[in-house]
Length: 191
Image 1 (cartoon, one colour):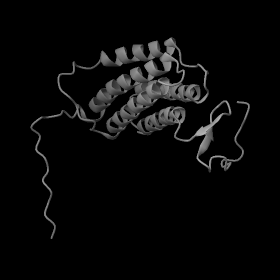
Image 2 (tube, one colour):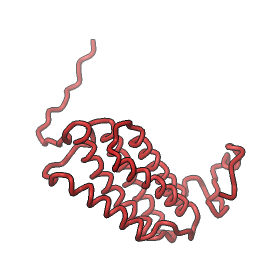
Image 3 (tube, one colour):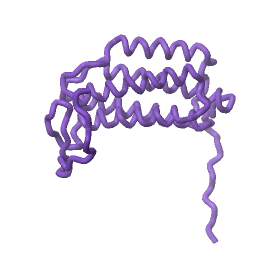
């Protein structure tokens, strides 16, 4: 890494702009900033999954590798024209997804994004990943974005769904299933 941050605040963004990786200044709400910022959110959400102490080691290894990929993907989106994520990254995710999914029973019901701490965190990471994919596609409507980056985010959200199913079994022995006829909680009257 050629440049280290010695000062955290620069005041250069105080007027509502930020610098892309190539030095170009854009508004902070620019589609490119939204895309790589949401990838950063997804990476942080994965950090919450990894913060749970009792994760199966194959899941921990997989998600740690994904965090490194997401850092690279964020850099790719931050620097126009930069390419890091390749078809090999997507293939690696697909192989892991297939291996994890092979250990699970077929899904016959909708599941709720809940359960234990790791399961719920994984579902949150999955939904943030889906949002990152949507932001990436929004950027791709007006600027060049490598298709592999968007495909990677799509496969990652699928992988996180499967990992959440695994974690539900690991933490609670099973998933929380959606029921059409589930009772709703009526508001309690106040005194």
